Image (cartoon, rainbow, N blue to C red; front, side, top):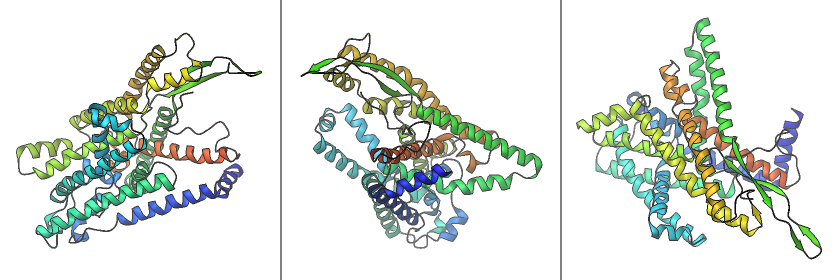
Length: 439
């Protein structure tokens, strides 16, 4: 306990780190306050009585911190921006024009960011219309008409763009990845209520015993998710000896740490952003047979169709995001330039192929484990766990919470170690999901 308080004191004694933490808290407070501001023309009392709930709607509401069900100005949150980022990254993978921009450095990234923002506006406009038509009951609209629809769409677009701006400010001026942080704070805000409801619903001695078993199972899942996040395959590296002047340099051993799940929580976020689309299409086409089928199938996250599509998207995005974030050719070139090599492997092309093979072999089991954890809430609901609590029983919510918290703690520890303070753990360094190196 003494070490804990010493670490807290060290954190707040570093001015830059203290300012970043306070900035992050301030931005998150603004985000939470905005989630309670209801769209003009919507009666919150009637909305609460007639709100659409269950299945995918409750899951989306968890990610958006309740703003989805409250019809707030942040009802769509950061999801449209994530969808736009997915599209731009896919274009960068397949279209030469976007590939060229990715290689142009800062200027190319700025242009890609601008394209992403513009695309976010169009996606938000489409999703806003589906959200208003599909999730806000007609009885809750006090001033129905064209003006309400147009003004609400404009407000929802502005809300999403403001959320995007908050995420960027957290990344630049705060601690952690801003976009992931906004999603995590929405999840965390609903966790206390979910666990209290689950405890209240479990009555009697049998209910208390069942609740304890659920907590123990949750603890086991958390440990499994941490293992998934921290698991690393180390590729040994040997540096050649070099004589510079009268001194001998090099000759040391090192390693390249390749994570079992190098993509972190991003495949989950990307897949969940796309799973938002079927529910909106069902709302738009609710009078047709196709809309009814989509609504009944993909509005319930316990159906096998939903989990099959969700798991497939996670697999695809895990390989895709790993491929675009870890370039084996660049790692091999850096090693060759610095006089490093993998023992038994020739530098250059063969090293790149070896790294790519190892990465492919560890990504597949990592992606499968990621899918299993992501669909655990569906099994928890089938086993009798309350739906609100089951969303934290593994699944997307827990993966995002663990990944973001580990990444944030790793950044805080980096600030401490850089200023010659002790780290946050006695047994070793905290490893965030984005921590990997190439020698």
